[in-house]
Length: 134
Image (cartoon, rainbow, N blue to C red):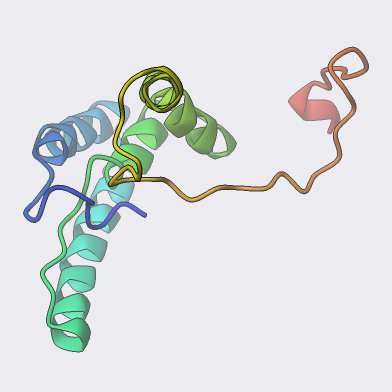
């Protein structure tokens, strides 16, 4: 995740915007460690992909999300929900297009499915437990 893109074959133009935002937020927060780690990881991953697969791979918009969200002091267990929330409109549009529009028989892009394997208490039985009490 965070490297490569189904459409963009060069760096995702959104990543070009998010990377400096991540760096700047880290500077404002007084900790650029995650941004620097992201930069090092991108460099090493690009080199490894080139050597092992002969392929060019570049950061996508999600790559710098972790360092940006960390600099914003957002808990890491919220990174994935934020990732999903940012895509709900697109996923919904995709479903509507598939169900009600004249979409192609086989869409060119489907995302992998995920199966929830945790305990589910049901919509009426769930209770919030404060983070300090967990």
